[in-house]
Length: 306
Image 1: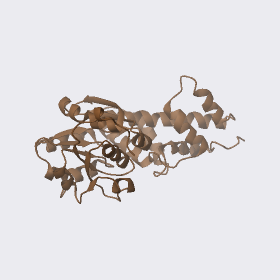
Image 2: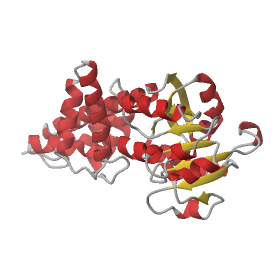
Image 3: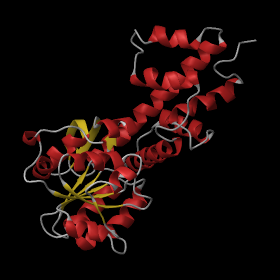
Image 4: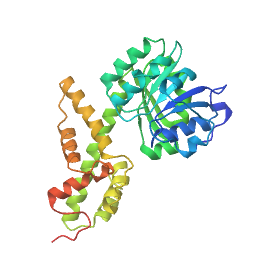
């Protein structure tokens, strides 16, 4: 379902938009654009959700078909190779682009590859923004995503009203690739915060304290964080069904470590978090990183200390 928007806060007339990648994140994001009154042309690798199938959106058989029919094309795909294939593969987006169109990649991919993709898209006469998001499935459904954008100011201003149907904190970080760089930085901070909360709760529980009450006490102090609030509760209640899968966070940390190597920057704690993720089930929520620390401690939160 989309957010409510008055006619004054949406572009008029309604735009012809494309959306490629209708997964956990993409489907609700696309839904907000449909609810805002725009004409959507969509394509996805998997099954189209009932909400999109029953909407006014037109399903296209190829990414090229989406691009030919749309003025602005949004992508929400898993990884760098997926974006490259959708953009430049057979029947890809690039084949359907013309001057004045815009490609907006909202996937989380390599900042270095993003700059190359943007140059190749611009060679068709179209414009390009990278606009990865933070906020997970809940943020996508509630239209409260943080959106980190890289690209030209004029292109950003053109697309900004559409971003506002999907998110709340929308920032033009800089040139092409800077949005992806900001997202990688975000994922470093999130991973290290998860690791810190996990360490603290395993320590407290094995020391004999009630981890739920320790978390409650910490929520009122300087250690307060969104991670402690949400993922600390997940660790205590053992609710590791994915909101954001470990394997996707590993992909993002892989981008961080590869980029850092290219830049000559050391990210020692990011590397440690990645190694801890390696010891976990990649299909579980990233809060399940705590299970790697529990193995090392030979103690699970919820046990009674010896």
